[in-house]
Length: 395
Image 1 (spheres, rainbow, N blue to C red):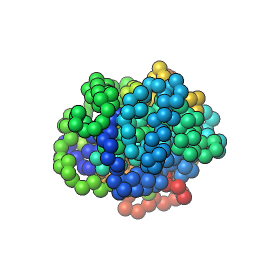
Image 2 (image 1 turned 180 degrees about the vertical axis):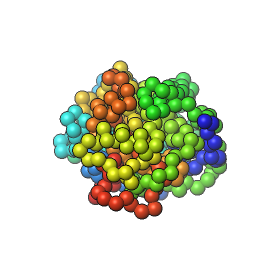
Image 3 (image 1 turned 135 degrees about the vertical axis):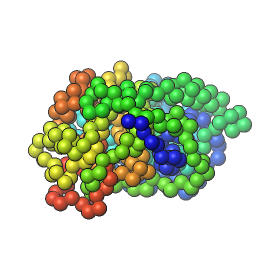
Image 4 (image 1 turned 60 degrees about the horizontal axis):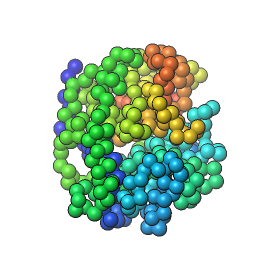
């Protein structure tokens, strides 16, 4: 079925598709309003079970910003980011997690999810306000933790410089950073895997075929000078109506997930689209055998997000990339849903192997998240909270 895509796209979808990685920045500082907005977004980001095992630290002190490049490149791993020594970003986001007492299930430390979602929301808020950024996973952990003032037991999982992108020789940025940006955006970032390779319909291995989304290749339509409304607090829906999600909105959602940043541009996130309340009910019964979902709580659409194998599995034992990159793609889905009039609920804690078996997911892939989407119900569903409703604000 061909997708009829709304035009122009909403401001949040536009931010998702316009986000790029920048490694060179102009010397002028970020506006105070932008810094406040980044702090607000980081502070209000939803987390697994509302526990806040992970967080984002916003560092705008000039002295800290001056020290951070040396902290990042202090060790051997950090040497992969030499451009940072000349890029001069006015602000850093440090994504960190509570390794000591944070929520976890076996080897799945959920601070990775909390930090990845909060970090991507901050990145998209910066993008909407005209600032550039770059996710970095290669750094000297102890030096970054000290420079960021992290607490006992907290571990950094990403460093994100933020500033006005330096584009062109008159911008004041370093030639190394500008050259790196130009090469990466032309050679790496532009090479996105096709939608039918990363998305499946109903079952793994059945390609999702959708009509073309005109702005998927970054040719985003609309007024660049339109006022940015801000992401605002992201909150899960209390329930869903029975109305199905039309093909046009589904295509836009998947395109937004497709453009999520990932380690080494590996694009390991995969998505299986499960449509219809009855089919979703059978899947969720396998996912939550001890906490069945009432019929009136069933969503009309579930996107099962999983990770394909990646040669570089983790930056540390606690921080596998599948628990960082896939939640970044989930954050893109949630931000896009706001523009498309859709509510959402997200689960990370469920029977992953049962879901994989029900959908025919290969053994070398990892199921990570269930993203329920639909038109929000006018009134909350009766009964206890749905087991899908796990990603939510603290408290």
